[in-house]
Length: 288
Image (cartoon, rainbow, N blue to C red; front, side):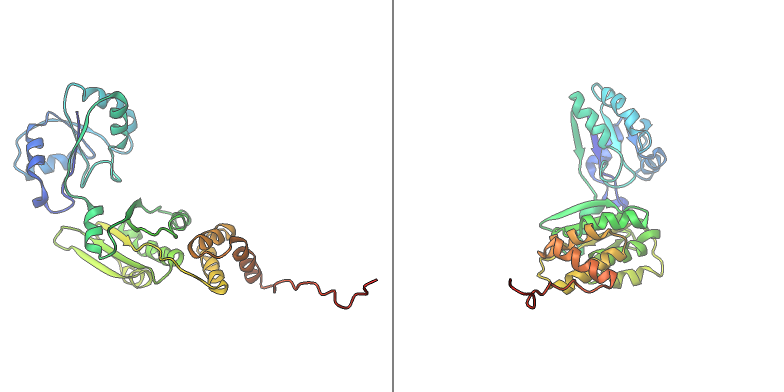
């Protein structure tokens, strides 16, 4: 059996009784970082010395089938460094291989940065989407944000503290500087902090530098009815952030109900600085 086990995301007191029992009796542990697992065992005072197998992003595909076969006869406890395996952590390819091989997959539920951030955010929780880490590069990040610009559900992202300010700036440029955003830092730890505001406000706050593990929770897009000049301004803002004009027009159209072609042509004229072509006037032409 493959057993996916959630580990604390910061506070060791969040270890479940089931996880302690599993760590105490495990004979094989597949761990994202075996050093972290050794530290966890010591911190919990567990004397068990199971076989530790490294399972991380760079080797999981190659080891998945082998571990799935091992799990036919021996329970394999799967741990990420923090939270639930497979959630922006190793484990998915192993689960995929186990399912394909008919090996049972189970889980020991526990701490989750995604759900914790969502719960404390104060944003709607009835429908949400988890988007993982934003891309590192500005252009790729803008593209990813454009793809969710019209998303109506609350969105949860992971982010590096070193890229937080840049990501919030891009988020404001693409989704709107007034979009409601919550940054959750060091959840469950001593320096836990939850900052709420607009994308613009939090980008300014983060510019001074932020440390720790970061979750960003973003309010979903509201249904809007825009006039054409406002829609054109939003299209041009997306273009300024790196989007192609055609794609920016499509995004604003999807979010506002304005015509895609109408937005594209009006934005193109505005961008080029040329006035809209006048309709031909045939009133003075002879009829015969």
